[in-house]
Length: 219
Length: 210
Image (cartoon, rainbow over the protein chains, first blue to last red):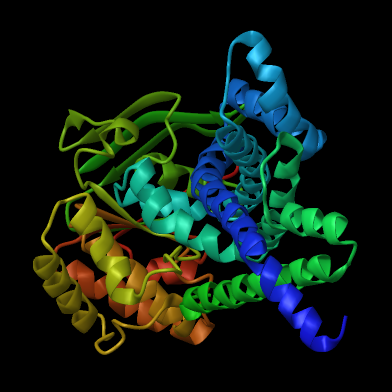
């Protein structure tokens, strides 16, 4: 194939790649929407002084971080129906991603929470703020600033991890490229897939910088 | 008038305060002096409700008063911490108005007006938009004081107000504390600096390590 032919072919497979991007982005966005708040809550629990809660959440984090995400996807989609919990493919993927990423986020937030000086809580307390007011107005903004670089890492990982949904039969970007590659016996689709991932990551890196800049107003 | 009657506080097996008695009269400045480890800060933490006393009684105007429980109901004590503990993510104005708005349910304009008045009185006008990292130690302390005063406490407590500052700022702190005294504020100052205590205090209470 000459260059014009290559270009023509690329344009031909682009719609299927873009519909794969849709799945990738949809998993990505909804996982973040679910996993970040859940991660904050689990992180607060892990940083608390209530031992049973701390231990229970510790076990959760251990399981989530201690087994492959691929395995977790399989268990949620193929395993849970055995005990009567049936998810649609897409919901199974989201559920597995959210509980997996929430565990990583929780550990990041726990670290951030524990780096806040106890004196901050105490000064809030003598000013008669409630626990939740203290968390929302004083602690979380400071924690956010601390955890942003680590969160950014996980977020970029998530874009690529979303390709694991192929294992339960969902069609994402990487799978679209794979299908085209084996059908047409050319590596060009996978090259395009790589470029699209890089573009997505570039956008995310840009957003991350913007958010970090937003938090640079205090030290 | 705040009285402590035979107050004891232990951490595990270590006794920090043992049958401790103390009286702070309305409008006076009481300095608590003693070496490090003598329980000065613990005492202040008990009075401001950050620690619960193990035994004894605290009285406010002759009535029993538990700062640990009462904390949420009434502005009895304000605290200026040794390291100030300003909120780094909030600017000077927000540091001062946050608690009056959230805890006293003041509206924004009233809280703001009060904060600006306090800043002016403490010589910090024009600093309201700055963030804590942009302030000097002395300025941070005055913001911490303004923040405590905005809650209209009856008793103001200072934990080592001179220790985090340059020595030449000591007189500034003296002026600040004595200035508040002329307004009738009851103040309790924990310090290891006896000279400083003698300069400002009406009464000095010495504590020794147990």
